[in-house]
Image (cartoon, rainbow, N blue to C red; front, side, top):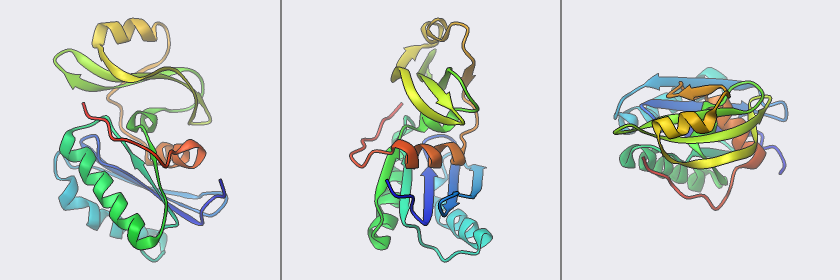
Length: 185
């Protein structure tokens, strides 16, 4: 895939509104993240304006990366609807990646998970190189927490970490899917 001049990443699947803006082939990155609880719809437009203003760019991107969940039904749909609307106006593709990929850090195998309530998590075990998922040991799915801990064994385990807009954007550019589907907790 040719690297777009400007790429926007957007995720509303967690209690955080997470945005990132990458520019050019080197993809210098600007990130924006705020804990908004369930107020994603109220904050996304203003946050996006702030991010583009900080970057000194007009409010337009050549590609949009969306975190496809897992997350709350409303939260995931707010982000997807907003991303699809922007992309249609801009004539840009929308590339989907699991929100769990926004939770990875650094290098090496690692387990990441979000609370799915009632003693469950929605988790995955990934191979990660330079902060980007390069392989999947265990695909995203719902697990009892103790079963997921056993599955992770001695790997680094990240339970409900802060999402990274940069990780989401880089995953989208590396292997984002054009035929994505939403996942709910």
